[in-house]
Image 1 (spheres, rainbow, N blue to C red):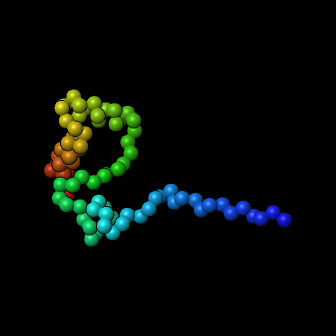
Image 2: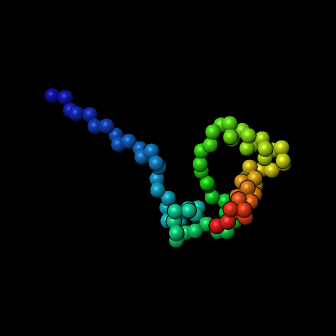
Image 3: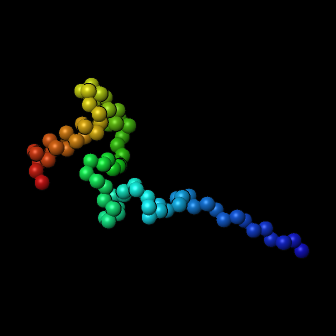
Length: 82
């Protein structure tokens, strides 16, 4: 009788969890908040056409896309209020 072959365990696709000594702050960890001025991701999807137009507008005005985003958000808050 043949012996059954044991498959090795698959690697976790997420990788290893961060260690407690990991200096990288995360937004979801309320006890380890990022310092002021640290950049954290803000992810959302847009159409390729919008992305192209937005990027071109920023470039034509000598701005980085993040600076254009900040200015438009500030403008919106001032005019729509919160």
